[in-house]
Image (tube, rainbow, N blue to C red; front, side):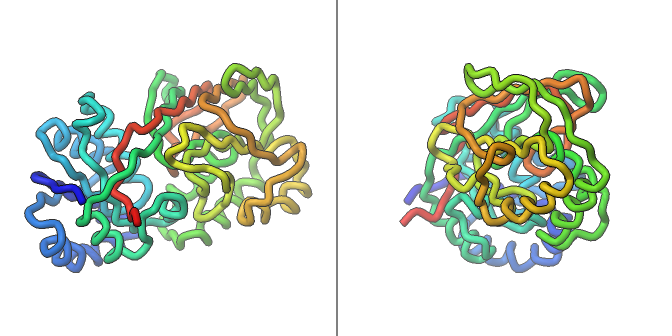
Length: 310
C-alpha cells in the first residue's frame, strides 16, 4: 500500500448526462473519509482537466483521482504528461468511473461501482500502464498531438463521436449503437494508406481502423479482446472493404469479439500510421479532435494507475 501526501480529485459534473453532479455529494462525503485531506477541482468546460492535472502535477500532487468518464480521464492523462516531469515523479491516477461508454474499466483492474472504485483509489496500489501518443491534423488543418489511454481510431469511429457529442441525450451503449447504425447508413468507405510498425500495409479501403490499448470502445464493442494495458503493444483492428450488407452482418461481431476474416481482423504493433486524400475523422478516447494523417506510437509504462491488485 502506498501513502500519499497530496491528493487532488478532479470532477466532471456533466459526465453521464449530468449524473456525476447528482452523485457528487455522496462521493465527496465518502472521499473525505477514505482519501483523507484532498482538494476538489470541478471542471466547467472541455479541456479544463488538462490544465488542472498539469498544474497539480507540477505543484507536487502525488495522487490524482478522476471522477467522470473516459473523456476526463483522457484529459488527466494528457495533463500529467504535459507537466513534463520524470516518470517516477508523476502522480498516481485513481479512477472513479461515471460516464456514457464506461469502456476503460472493461480492461483495467478498476471497479465499475463508484464506491468500490473510490476504495481502491484510497488503498493506493499501483501498476504501470501504457498509453498511446498520437499525432494528427486538427479540424483547422494544424498539426497536433495527444495521448490516449484506451482506444484511438479513424474512419467510422470519428463519425460516431461527432453524432454522440452533438446529442443532448445519452444512454450508455444504446447511444453508441444508434449513432453507429446511423453513421454506417450515411457514411462511405475511405481509401487510406496504412502502415503498422515497419510494415507498409499499402492502400486499403476501410470503414474503420481501431488502435487499441484497451479492449473495448463505443460502449462495449470488443474490438481488441487480447489487448492489455501493460504489454507494450497496440492491438490494431481493421474493418475493411465490406459492402453495406456485410457491415450489418458482421456488426454484431464487434460486440462479441469474434473478429475473423480477410475484411475484419486484428493484428499487433507498436506504431501505426495512416494518410488519405479524403477527409477521415479521428477518434481519441471518445472525442473527435481532427483528421488524418495520423501517427500513433505506444509509450510503455508511462502512467501509474491505482488499480485493484490482489
